[in-house]
Length: 415
Image 1 (cartoon, helix red, strand yellow):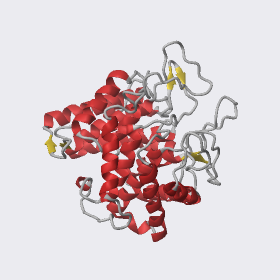
Image 2: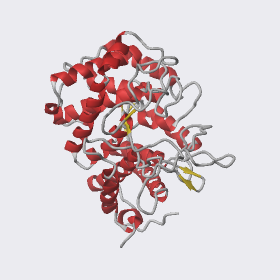
Image 3: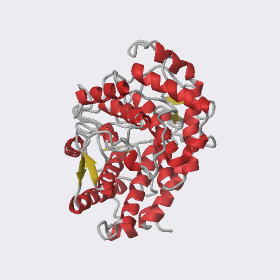
């Protein structure tokens, strides 16, 4: 039987999707990884992280499986409904992020009961709300509005109010550390609000214009506050971090920053955080997973970041148009777009070299040590997306974008 990497790229996508599907549960959610912590070396990851569910199901969109993606987003909506009272309260009276617990949306819940697992650490993570609003609005604009009810829009309206009350202040961010003001969190929230603001910001993505602003109105003041908060941090991630892998979300999925800022973020990540087997989350990161021991000077490398970089470069190659800070169009030449495509291929090759022989995308490598959260659901999803984007670009612009034979046909030499 051929190994994972001996298969052509379209078959590798299919096999990677099978791996991802094994992490999907009947209610439409995805456990973060199969790791159950039965060996006592760390926290169980076979539970639901709300962010991980949304990014894990993202692969379905790129494979045309919209019904499965809607099912996952409806599950997230049900989780929000379970904690609707917390959202309403925090949208009226702002909780103390540093000292009060049990007043925020839980970051992770039990995969069957949807009950919170613990309130003991930083659950206030704004990017979760931003990603949710962004994808719900995106799905409706793509014609899936019939899947959502007036009750759903009432909840989304309360999430909007929560964001306005809490949305541009310190949170615990993508990596659940802080609280601190994070540009990745502010960008996610602003992207979510812009999707509903309905003033043309994301119109270039859609063949037909579907108005959604009347369903959950977003004011110009919200947008102005969000843009101002984001601009005060960029190009930094936070006061304590000059750059962070999480900032790649500002390029994809949100595309919420101007072209020059995109290039600055990419340069910072590539210069300071990219390693042979993954991307370091940020300078000085000491987390390396339970049961792993870093040698002096080692920092965990996340293959997820290589997939993310590949996706970002594919997106820059795709449209041939970017925007400056004043929202004026910048047209890219084919030479520039081909250069971005090649960068996407480069990072995709690095990603597959960092995967296991079975085709799993691990959470991390610490030196030669493999993290036990293998496969990691949203990283597996990003592998599928990165591969499918390269396939789509070669099909659409075959005269300009060409995959190397070893990437297209298989046979990649994996370290």
